[in-house]
Image (cartoon, rainbow, N blue to C red; front, side, top):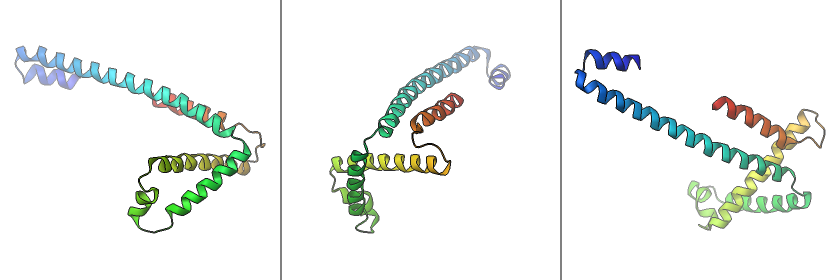
Length: 146
């Protein structure tokens, strides 16, 4: 802001200084409003993500095995052909339900794989609350960002 004030005082006429300064205030005000909106939306998404992790961790083993079979079937269908157009768009035949199901199953399988590896390689007990750990880390990172 010091550079702006110096520029306005020495280069621009005095009548235009007030208008330029007010314009700068308006820009800063709208940036602050945008930051507040982004912070609020990020907070809501963060809370929902933590609840989603809790639901994934509390999943019944029978449901997990069923989802794993569904995921393998969809993944085999996706990798049936090697073309990039097939792997991105054509494998789900423009059925958004199939695409969304694959995406959801992808998240479930990777969450449980990550949880298993985290617990196994660190020698933690099998009842370790991985979702609570993720929420704590997410909260710390979120506070550092904000």
